[in-house]
Length: 219
Length: 300
Ligand SMILES: Nc1ncnc2c1ncn2[C@@H]1O[C@H](COP(=O)(O)OP(=O)(O)OP(=O)(O)O)[C@@H](O)[C@H]1O
Ligand SMILES: [Mg+2]
Image (cartoon, rainbow over all chains, first blue to last red; front, side):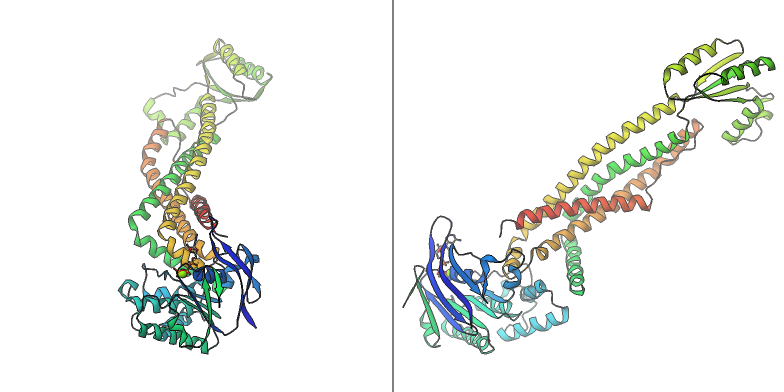
């Protein structure tokens, strides 16, 4: 059963620049897929199309058999709650603690206080940030901030996890730690797409790699 | 339901904390709201107080006809019947001088005026009430009676009651315009304050939206903030106005007593309080709603 399905998807940005061109592919439920390509190849665009942050100019994006472009404004948020997003630019909120950053998705869904606390704690434990919940995120190292993003993306246990360059600017060992983390989510059945421009990291994992070049797949 | 309630109490707590986090700007906002609400409230209360006076007064023209002392009883009787038979006359009442004295004693609160004066200085009088509010027949009757041999003096009593009534009516129109303008200002001011808040929390809103926040979730803290400011602003307005009127009242009552009237400015009661807070809350709420809507509509 495929969770993510692209049918001849093209995305032109305002100004006429074509970021991805005529892409067709499927990602099965529970699959872990890498997305590789040079800077500007269209990796972020592709992930944004899956999350419904961008709409395709032509073609169809189906997530869990739902056409995101057809969803009403009021139902899109509910679809997004099944997706965990790790943004390339992190989007960490520096006006609140590590704990409150991770708790945000649960606030949005409306979790009961005690259950929320339990889940935030579990997510922070999982990424190795236990004990830092009271800190402001500025006090975290680059790698720790990356982990904070992961914790926030998985705290509400989404079925799909989209990670945009989660290993950028990290040394190789640290990057491998993070990929191991994703593997553990994969083992509990989460569908995962991870983008990176450094393909050498992915090779060791023996997973499917989607290679983008100027908005199109290469072999 | 429980979930909804939890979200709202959560947002309300955030709101109150937010108020405390920016005490100065919150206070300034509150003051502006309170002033915008206090001005029309003050005018309205003064008008309501005056209106209650003008209601107590006869608006139908009333003429007091004071008779010469030592007049002839039969001639007086004849005049009374002649007046009562006239067209447009509603009532003719004869007020003997003894009764007039007792009324005066009642109105001034003294018990034994005669002791001080020695003799009742008041004349017998007729009090005439006419139908309609036209000034012309009243003036004609005034002129005619003034020339009558039995009559010492004629006074038209209702003129100032009519003037007061017109003044109150004018005041009401001023109130309506003022209240309308200030209501608009209040909504706009709140809308602008909320717009500034949205700008400072833009990142948070963006992230929340990207990870599945509904419009309602994003709107909630701002709406709460505006509503709380509306309630507090309304309360503050009522408090300030009540204090002001309570301070003015002794002087006003004294002034009224000089004209033989019982009068005090009404203080806002609980219904007024409810109405003012309801109005300010509705206005700040709508201002905030529009501000958030304008921000949210940029996305699909
Ligand atoms: N909002 C936008 N408006 C206009 N052009 C855009 C926008 N976002 C991306 N692009 C363009 O689309 C192309 C693909 O961008 P995208 O961010 O998908 O690349 P990427 O593969 O993620 O690159 P990187 O590895 O640098 O993050 C780029 O050339 C970029 O300039
Ligand atoms: Mg990118």
